[in-house]
Image (tube, rainbow, N blue to C red; front, side):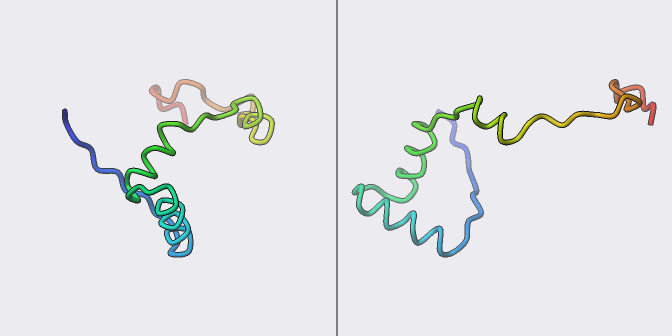
Length: 69
């Protein structure tokens, strides 16, 4: 199975908090973070209510491959 390198940029305080949570869960930091990512779920309805899609102006080009802009 091929491996992939993942880099997360977090503050030192957040890393320390994650390390404490991993220790309480009796897992390594990597295993804990991967478990959290794999088992997370996103409430897309709530997300889209909080962050609605951007509305483009009517004259904005829609086909960027033609380089109309």
